[in-house]
Length: 196
Image (cartoon, rainbow, N blue to C red):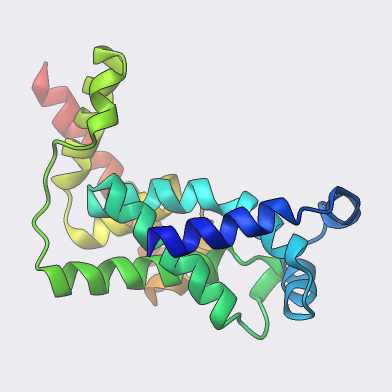
């Protein structure tokens, strides 16, 4: 799938019309979606630019596998291309994109009967050892949370979703999303205090 995605993205980049990009770069997600549905490839490029890195971050945290996260990110945006939503709530595609990403990751985990591993990515070996230790420590701490708590934390931190968007995506009341975040932060704080 990676080669198809890379080919598609390379073709889009080569066709880049910077004058069209400048005209629409400040547009809302709803407007970009409307323009993309009308055939404007620049609108899709802007959507990808807005969300690709945060989706990769979210899925890397979710899957614990950067390569698999990139594949799932590609599949997420392919779903946007093939089955764009007819409308978005609140002019933002963020909840729709992260909902698709989360569902794909969950389905993939079930299909692969994926086991969570904390050691990751060959490129991690080249980073500063202190940074790598901090990143792995954060992943280890998140892995200690229950799925329902971890989902709220990762959607908030990596997905940059608002609590009402998290509640909608997880199909839970807003108060429950807020409680889970507070409870998760208390657990993480307690674990950090007990380490010293």
